[in-house]
Image (cartoon, rainbow, N blue to C red):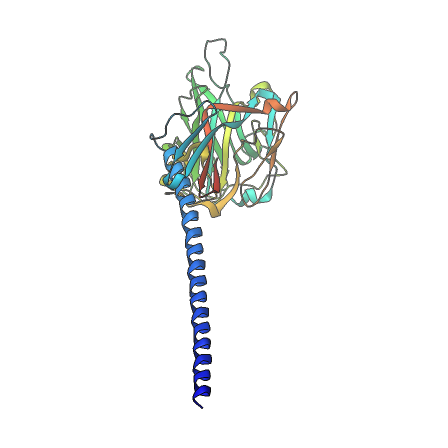
Length: 357
């Protein structure tokens, strides 16, 4: 009986030992699994932190000098690295009657009714005229989504163009829209400087038409009603020409980037935020005082750089086209004083990259 009891005790001890070992194994496995997850989370957070640090450096004066291959590499904790590479920006280029961009005649463009915002970056490039003045030509078009059934603009829709005032010595940028109550309404600003980028924004809130230059209000006109589309037929949204072009000065000469169309009236703060973002502005994400991504009807960066397609970054995806009657490559140019950046993060043999365009 004693021998039997001893055997039972021994068997019980063995069972308990195996159970304890099993529990320890499971605990260790769980700990290792938790450690692995924690390690992955730590690596991911460091990769993201590196990207954010690189973005901060790229937007500040703390950035070191770029090397000959236009890169900067910065060491971070635990042998991690941040690599910042800069690339020249592309832009659409217009040379008078040779280039025309067509964004189509899509009906959703007409969703701008009693509120809208239109913005774009523009850089006029002109030759010196007979009077020794380097300015856009009188009536030189910038944008046009309009129709003139009686020969007068804008019978319907809107357009933007240059004019010359004060005996052709001063350039003026104008924006005109047809409203069903107030009729044709225009705003603009003077002192256009050739070969300089400026940011133009037009805002209509149902009571007032306003125009901004580089985020600062330049002029306003009281106005009422909805945008008049009543006589619009199948006119297309053009860059660089009127709906019906003809003579030489009815074509644009220069560069245009980041053309956007919204169905809401932006605040002054939103306009200023867009200006501060420059050519790298992304309209699909809210940032600082800009929160109008849900109202965007079309946004063309106009930086495709090759071919004839103009990508629409809005949810509508209405790509346009740009064409040169002689040389398609002439539709594009690089901007030597403006860049977009690619930031790469390397940590624990993992990598993460983001393009800031």
